[in-house]
Image 1 (spheres, rainbow, N blue to C red):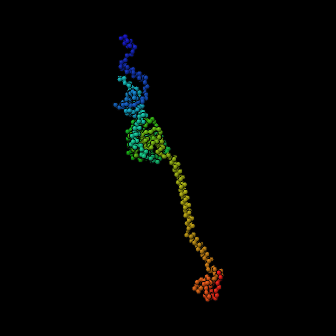
Image 2: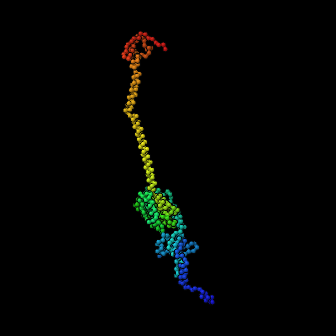
Image 3: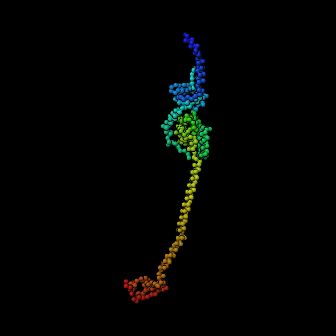
Length: 386
């Protein structure tokens, strides 16, 4: 009895309400107004527009809530077993002495992102949607392309600047899309509608500037990846940084390291093409010069041939040859021999006598001189002894 009186004199007395108010005051003074909490969602449900969570690290748990006004602005709505990173503050309900975390922002942890990436990647890989044989070639000189990205954004500004510098002949169709957050259905609908449009496109570029890997989780969506994999024209992705890899990159026809790299990979370089043109022009000029020179030489050869084989020249040559033969025959003609003192002897039948052995005594012979002939009778024969 004495102890209780002494204790009552030294201890503070509270009502339940007063105690809870004191605890709340202590927490508000001694706890950070905002903090980052890393946890795993063991339970997630929406009631009356509010998102209620049970958060755990495997050793302890705490309740969390995102009020409806906050939930509408969240870019990520977690599901059970998702790892999350939360920006929040501590709420203490004095009426029940109950503590919870009020959520201002919530994002997937990197482990959740990679888990989703691996699950979707494995599923689509087994279905053959990542087969290299399905990838189509990028058009060499695209006439018109669609740029799917956030509008406005630095990624779009870089793409517009780079395309103007590289190949201004290509027409760009700018199509705004969400590039992060819980917008899978919206992005799927945009891609699906684009398939049905009558825009004469040669390719599409899906671009998103740099950010954390968690911000790129939208492009790990199975539905979005399927739309890209079945798109009727080549799809080029330029999502995040060079080290970032999403499921959309794996099913696209071509993956570029950045949005700017995507437009560089797709559009030809004006300067390079100009140099190629000048080089081809020189090659064509040299070829034509050589071609016409060869044709000229061929014609000159033909001209020389025809000149050397012209009828007039042939007749002249024949005439010269005939004249030569005539002169030769004339020089060797019997008439020439007769003029030199030779005679031509023949019998009365006109047969030429070229040997004494063919003549008999009393034969009558015709002796022809250059200026006439005489008839003689053989009186005697003399033979040369050989």
